[in-house]
Image (tube, rainbow, N blue to C red; front, side):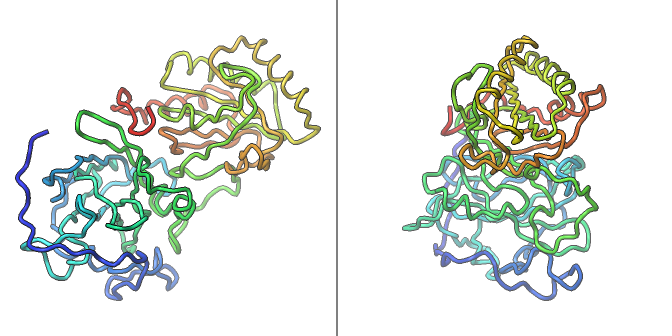
Length: 400
């Protein structure tokens, strides 16, 4: 990586660590039923201070020139459905420098001195893509709060700007469970999982407009609900493995096989075994074709007349009958079971099936009540193909 001259910093300061929520500038308010989209947003007016008229989809922040860990954050901004790319969305961001300070600099507008000079904008392109090159921020000095980047969104409509979950780093020792549990998943999980490419760290990160944003106008949705939302982290759970590579264990699907694509095929109290067999054969074929880049789990959670012994034999016989080699056949007592922690997935046991597709431990697609036919096979195949990563050969920081 090319070395850069250090920047001439006139003075440094630390902004008091406080909530990112606050009062917005009334001049910027566009409301939904007289309610501010996103709720109160401290210093929302800073979003527009010195914002350029033309904003690129690829941005290099002033922080890039610091002698710290180089960082690329890149991904797609999606509409509410988590599947349709959202073009022309402005993402404003700011963060501390390599010393954990919101540093001042000659020429910085005094109005935004609280955000420091490492602040900039990027705008999604026609395909919703964006990329930010910056330096990895440090945590606040003498603080237990993890290092983070503050992002905010302005859509190309009359909605007011709103903040989304701060970007934090999966390998940060300060990122404790208590912090993760407090995250609101505004716009999706803010946890960045890093890949190492030489001296550059890369985080693939998608944003879902409106997700868990208060007062955000909701699209008409089906009343059928099962599973967490696209953009959320896929929770770990410990099913019983009846058949497959981890037979006889309680391996965590997402923890052990979370690096690349994964599919969790949930079936609850309404099993149709003929259709289940068809789906398993299709998913087995996909697993073979994609090798180490795809891991598939069948998770059976029928609470009716549950018997561990019977359930285990039932799935073992099924695996042998279909001659499965790659798919893991697992079970839980029910989808509300807390011991296996499968309840964290929020699966509706009354639907026929729920398909959760994840990549790097984050949910990227979801389907409910899919019949095994050519059209639906294409849905799964296309989802996997369209979300392939150009960085699939890189190792994860803190995992590999």
